[in-house]
Length: 367
Image (cartoon, rainbow, N blue to C red; front, side, top):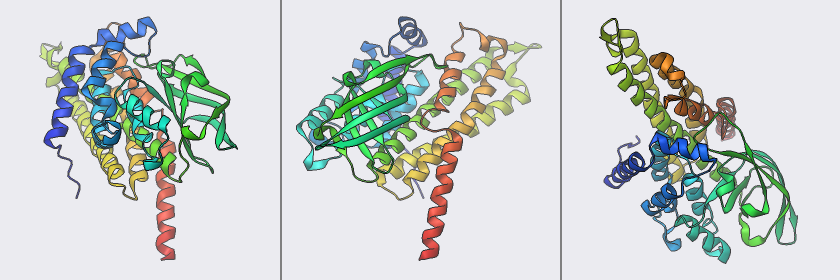
């Protein structure tokens, strides 16, 4: 039995985060960041950092709040609901990961965890792409191209995860790599390729080479992406209900027609399922359960499979106005599409779930 009820502190975090974003991240701010070609609005960034978003999961020893992935998901959900730009969750995850070395943390990692947690520095998350790391002395040399890195050009550090035969979690200065901005469907966030040309990574920047830590970081980002998708879907439902309540056809509000009611109900049911899957995955991650990787895969597979359905229903209920540039619906439709693709498609995570179930079956037979 899993308790999905929020504690008083969690409810207060969600309410305060929503209030801040409602006041300081309206759609016209999102559009202004787009028009200016920026990765983040610095005033919004500073407000979020003062709210404590970037240090939520940072250990107390590094000045953080020592909370978990569940609390980060509450923030990620609200960021998705507001279509907010900026690498808030990536920075929080990097600050949390920078402290994984425990008492053996290098001075650089300690400073990075503190500065990232307090929002003085920003971080991106690097996983997609073809990256290799070879040993050179006590450090590594990193080579390759990473794709789909959010807001890379505005960051100071890159949290790099390699999950192959030699897994690593690395902290690399963004200035050591080359960033190339990409044009994507998503207009609410900027996305980059990051190129590493034989970048030297000193031993102090190798946060972990323990088996499982790289996968753990990737799973955390996967769950946070599902939480962002949940927030996007919630906002799509809210916009749809508001529209069909006031828009009339044949002298009646659209929302009074049974077919429209069914569409809204289907959207709500989907989002409740996504909420359960996402927060179960976050709780499993925080508790260190053996099924945490599978739970992360289930959450993201559900989001990637079903969020496009929610977006499609929202567009149908809005009709022609939903296609216009002036209406904000398209900002969420675009973000929903990209959320369904980054950090693993539905097919990718279905394969992860299948592989987990096969390993479990083999283990049980062996026992």
